Length: 201
Image (cartoon, rainbow, N blue to C red; front, side, top):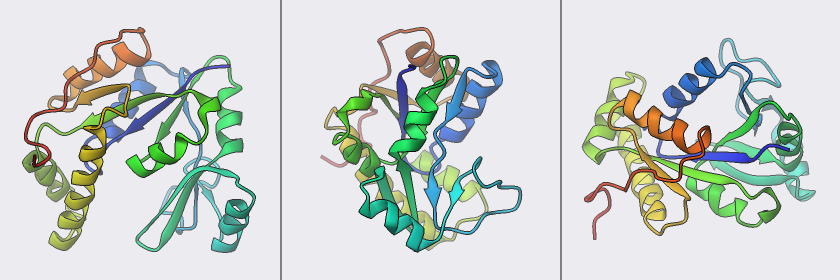
């Protein structure tokens, strides 16, 4: 059974870019645990690949059966990682299992010590940089950006408690990718340090 790898970090920090680089360099070497969501599929999203798309009732039925490792609600939609999805993902001896979840999900995972994940927090070099990245998407309103920055502050504050095994600062994609790859592929044990000033003292 492979080791579970958990990547966390604020929206807009560049997790998806780093994950795409991993998948590109190591075809078949990584796979996602597929999350459940009650939101509607976007164009091109396939059920069972992007997400398991379910109704709110189906989602809550799974909650009642303690079927989730972690779950959250955002913008009126539920998202969750089921125990079964992770167990299925870990059965593949060739591919490492990846989870991309927020800090609240990481807290909930602590209640499932059987998975013994390697946890990595992807941090922005500064909040100003994160705001620029969110604005650059062209899909966010100013209100939405401010909301995401507020969430980012909480995520960084949680990371500052030392709960993650490693930190990777995504200041420059290739450098950050090299650090991440070293940690989860090459077995290195030295990541980055959270930049000063990300969270008010």
